Figure 1 (cartoon, rainbow, N blue to C red):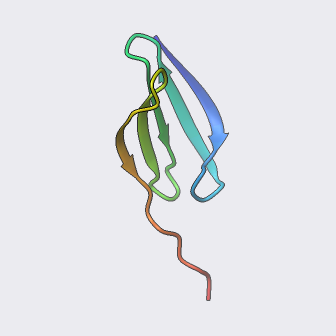
Figure 2: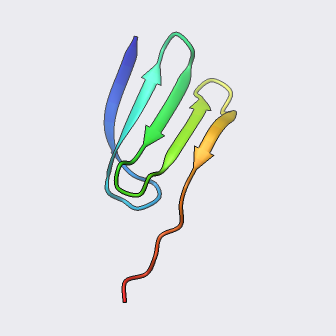
Length: 59
């Protein structure tokens, strides 16, 4: 079973989704705007995959 929450992206601040998988204890946070991705164990905190691109300043 999965639980999905709408959150603010920790990288850019726009709307992102956080999914909890109760069977595997994995948490996936994904932002479609800045392509942020974090997959970690919600029980131990171990990070399995992470991708956080840099943000560019406006000119």
